[in-house]
Length: 568
Image 1 (cartoon, rainbow, N blue to C red):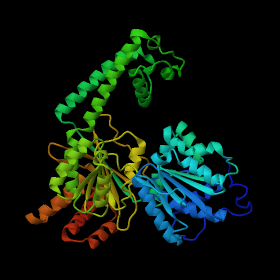
Image 2: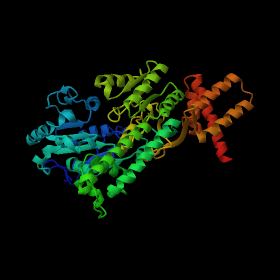
Image 3: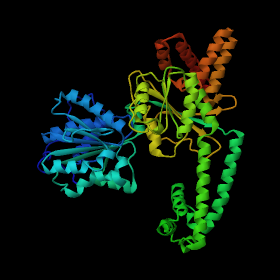
Image 4: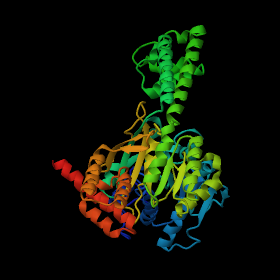
């Protein structure tokens, strides 16, 4: 991989490669550092940066930097995974053009995908990858051969490493990379490793910069966050079913590993990959895992009845595993916890609820819509693109305060004022976890903190502490009792009880005590009582009504009680 711009256009060796300071306040320090590294690497490379930290702004600035270095127009190609992201990029580009006072003719934006098929000769072209697979490589090659400079921006680039999506890079086999005026920038919150990482590096350039959650928190480029791990329990009948399934899985695997001993010692991911191969009869080369330590897979590779029996047992085990996962995912306490949590969180903040199953999301929607009519929406794959787009816009403008979604908002949704996320049912995918967190941590004026609530079943192996390093962000442990509808917050409860006792001893009247109980209950599922005294005083002064002021007064008292308890 080259390290300089093409010889006909490279920066003079004695010149300092720096990012122009046209708008010094428009870029964070990390973005400036990243652009300098990108230029030093010849205008190619991939960037891993946490969602909400400014990847789009980085890419738009890279266009300016590149054109200034080359001294001529650059044809910009942007590839995205979804039509919603295509529209967001179009909006960002329009704002970018206005900042540059670029004329419509010089900076025409074309869209390809999501029902749009604009002429492909615009300076800025945005493609949904499904549309780009069979045309983008050809168009880039034609422009490079005609002497144009082409800048390919691959957003959410982890999608483009394999399968048909990788066809967008087919032009690379037809050009001289040392001489062609081809520049690239890959963007993702979670760049892949292994073979996928190597494929992307060959196409877009190596990873040149990583900007993680901890660093973004420390540098205040994202909103501070409080993370709440909320422990739930099964109802008795669910617990009995879970234990029964687990027992059957254990007995099944005991027999299976005797017929396929190479399964012993595999990681969970490797195990399920091998079980899927076994279940479909894909023996032979699929058993490479067993040869890692010199062991030959016995029995199953000899074919015949042993092989068929191993496949049958693998299918049984997988079916039991899926059944157990569904039971955990749809545990009854999840919905009752989410309902009570939303009630306590109040009526002001926007709330995103992330689920894994559409049926579960629909059930929660019906319940919440009765409690908050006209204020709840939902987005998922069965709704259709137009309905999802409409519901998302209604949430964005504030008509909806609560939006329930499954996987349709894991990428490409920009709602800076959403400050609360509830993970209704967990996911084991690191990428999905990070993306969901990214939906609520974008900075916005007046948004002081974000809160993420991760609901998990305590009696299972479901991961409770699943997030990346969050720097100085605060983490709280809660428990929810579905029978009583109460939350337990050990650290907070003692301070709260002390405030209640002080009020009773002071002869507080019944009406005031009821209001204090309301405020203290709401504080149990928030981290406000951990705020600094000066911050609490500011919140009291800025309160918009008596109820809000009462809440912050109670949080100030709880904070004082907590400090007193810690000292004693």
